[in-house]
Image (cartoon, rainbow, N blue to C red):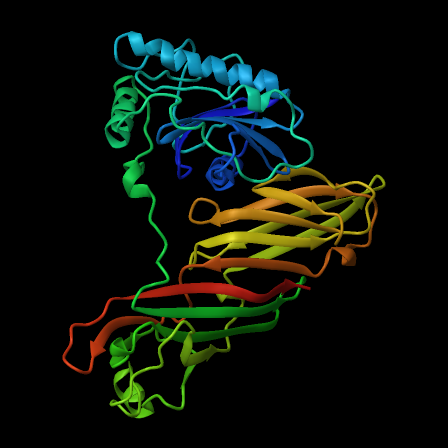
Length: 442
């Protein structure tokens, strides 16, 4: 089957309805659907976008997307016909009973994704009333040359029907519930789903960052596990610089702090308050970050690693079979995970037979990049298998790993901001992240 899945998702990637037409792991389909909104840009009138492995053919439905996920060998004109058929079924029902009609065959919203295998003859889609669709046919009349930019857009204004987003989306979900569908419980109103990132113009911004330097031996044990943290400050206006900051952190073994020479060390050591030695001076202001404090955590063991990776190459029948797996700690949810495996010089890309996530072959550097958008409670472990020509097992090391997390080992955070001149406390924000400096399996 060239059509892998047909889905209705929100603009943020939440799955409302999905029907898979091939055996797909839960992690893979969730990853594909979650990645799609990030690939859709603005400025061009396309209704398809491609990655290394799949093609998305889609149609905006106000606050939602009607979406086909296909392989790259599919005929894009036939994909368009399939999308148009689904589109027509939803406009068709505009004049029916005002609700949502079931097509032939069983239907289900995949909330747990526990059973991803379905019959390729099932219809698998509900149809919507009052949701207008239009398809940009001209933009799909030929295959793109080369790899397209990762930007595609909804059709220009004026196509389709204008609807109230929250009301219609809720009506859509309620109608599906009335028909016996299982609805994703964590689906929020669309307006509440997009949380803008912290603006760079906050009066005061504190950045808390921990960087990991980790070297793991492939046969077990650690060569290095070092954590270095920093707290930095940006204040835009001088009148907001007459402040002090109350700090909290977890009591972690091996954690030691060092404050900037201009910080009152006695105040920090006794009350965990960061303030200048001279309270009559303001903190520096401007666009640049000012370092206030740094810390280090040493003596951590393997049990405290956020992510471990095991690689098992074996030669059989003139080929090298490489099984690689990851296991993540429950301490952190990891984002944008990339596991880079060096490969021997190859004439062709490796044959990836199984993967939880996505992969890309970097022919210039001869590496296989295994990427997982998010590792959380639903996918603490995962695996990949690929095949290459015969090669020595040492060629697949060192494995380089990168990721980020929104929390830290020390859990350092600012819990209060105290003005020194009787003014109202200025607004402040803090950005917290754990990132990898060096993270290797050797």
